[in-house]
Amino acid sequence: MKKIYCLLFFVLFLIHAHAQITTKEPPVSFYAENAELFVKETVEIKTMSPVDMERIRQEDEEDAQKGMPPRFGYSIKAGFDLNNSGTWTELPNGDKVWRLSISCPNALSINLLYDKFWLSDGTKFFVYSNDKKQSIGAITSYNNKGTKEEIRGFATSLIYGEQTTLEYYEPKEIMERAIISIAEVVHGYQYIQTMENTSA
Image (cartoon, rainbow, N blue to C red; front, side):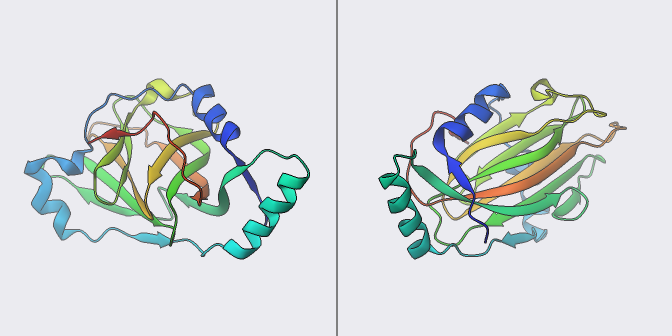
């Protein structure tokens, strides 16, 4: 894996810069009336390569001696989007839900960096923990900083644990599908506390 620094201030800057404002609602798959349908669907899991902690500790020691800021995680190239990854589920009313789980063995936290992120009006995006105790969302088109023609990147905050799930909700009347491209998955190996995580 290529050595890529994921500095705490850099990630928090990205989140702040993109004004990550959410509706504080549970993902569609959490609703009781949808429980049986989603239980039947097997969600695709992308398992990232394990990080070499011995090498990382050595690099961190060398960086500390040089006076460089500490990092809390290690970034791994991903390249996941709505077209090449995940599982689609159609609800009885015609609405659609896309889900993708990402696993980072032995990670304390996971957060995601997107090279392209654009939501059409009416669609919703969520990120939550494997045990569903932490949830970020709904992220809506309010968070778009670019247009569909000039899409900008995005970042979502930390989800604690070794696995996180992304969920995109698309009502049946939507004509323009969202563009969600995960460029990098940050494997967190040092614990930090953020204010972005909420209970589902």
